[in-house]
Length: 262
Image (cartoon, rainbow, N blue to C red):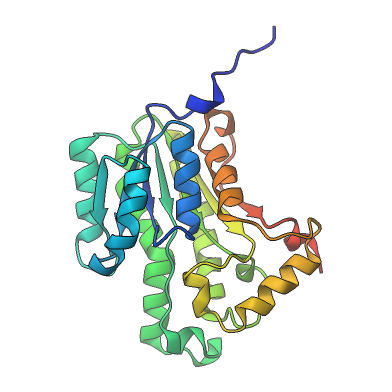
């Protein structure tokens, strides 16, 4: 018998998702949020601080987000407050998008072997540990299973010039995805790392010679094209669907095939 699938336009209808990492309309998290919303999901959206709020608030309004709140993972207790509000207002969470990373300039721009302890710990806290902490807080809210996403990059697996200590952090992040997927899988919770090709986001602006990196990706990728935030968003939203319920612990490359080329 031919299966009958629900209308894809409402495939996430009734689902509740938390989106962390929208900075402006060029953010990968914004591309993902648009895709989630287009499929019918209700979204909680966070912003980093008051300065960022003016850029993010209009986007949250466009998403009709019923929950809009600050979240700086380096502020003591703020992560816990965000999840407590979701528990109070929704009582559940179906998916989580973690799309944040940070490294102090002196750590990111120097050799890995020269990175100081403080710079290394701050890089790891924001770029890796914060995802692990969010996963721990999201777990009891995903009562009927769910999906957790974080953003990584090819520099976790291969040495990419100027990516430096962030490559180390992303490698740790990908390892955490595998371990968390194994631990939470019996509860029906899937965990994924999404690895986009280079994108001109605000976060990427801190990487030296980033324009050259984008040119190289476009010329070498089998697709001969750069990805967009919408490309990343659509691929990510697919993994939140019930049809992807047996896909977990993976690194999904959305890079036009660049990662397969020497």
